[in-house]
Length: 426
Image 1: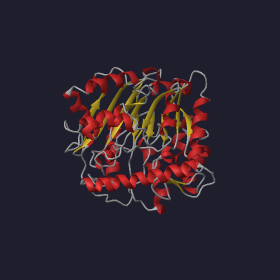
Image 2: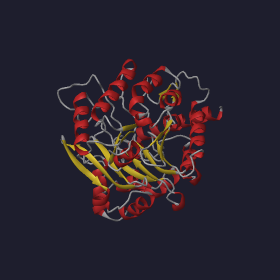
Image 3: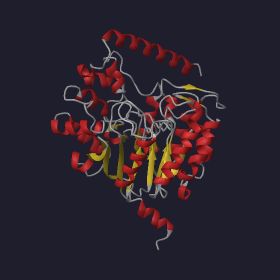
Image 4: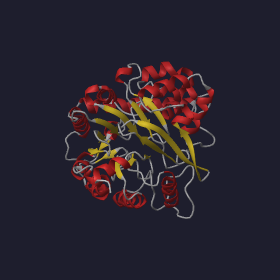
């Protein structure tokens, strides 16, 4: 029999699983799986877990990228639902090491709100600790997660760490609940900067967070581009500075939140500092997507050999993206993402493959030949100015008339101004 350390290393060569935005409603109907316009009910959760097991029956690692709780779930059910999900995932993958990320809905006090050091985080830490600290991967998880929703875990590949941060606090929509931390926003930045800068010699980091840096294309198009809507607030530049600093040894960024599969470049203008970003799709079909998840095959050196997206298309599991077969990528990294991004601009066949993977082959597709550029530009343009210059008139769209779009833009500007005042007052 192989020694334990060698067995863990061997298992790490199998596909890893990436799951995001489950948005589970334990009170939902159990007779039929939830469909477009609804969050995940027990039937859809069971069907999704079955699909994951069929495709990836024994993953060494499962990344859970946040937003486990349904939209508008009552706060009284928040902690018990997180515990139920821990039990369900544990039964599905009893040998896997889990890496848990908090999403903006994962709170007992409201959307985009949190209570560091509070009862909810302590309860979640207790329920998920056996999964996250499997094989001693994250011995400080229960303590660190309960304090600020952030922690470090050793991944089962030598020299590879998962650095998990709660970047919901950096959203322009964030508000703190009761907290023993004087400034949760600054505290999270300070923790992340210190954690990355103190990376042991020779190690590399996968930075896991729920909300990706960059432009929210859906919201931007919804208000006809009157304002380019960012995912994060004023601290996005600081976060990207940490990601792109070679001293912080960030090898990959993984996020969720968008309910769509995509990839991005952190610093496309400077290939020497560029870091690949992967955006995981959602299980919840509430925004018209088909339920989907990712599998990634990680080499022994910690690089990604291939990436696949599977979706429940009309109730049946189907591969909707394969990095090698769909895009000819022999590896998934910042360089190959830049090359694919360049090819996508002018290749209609590749654009069609991107569109199919984006929302899990949903019908009608969100990405069309007419609006493709608005989504393509978000891949390599993370700030508002460069995104607007790239996307131009393709931003136009959305369901609301322009007068409502203008009102929404004004309200957004007021919210951003209030956020800026709050930050500057600290």
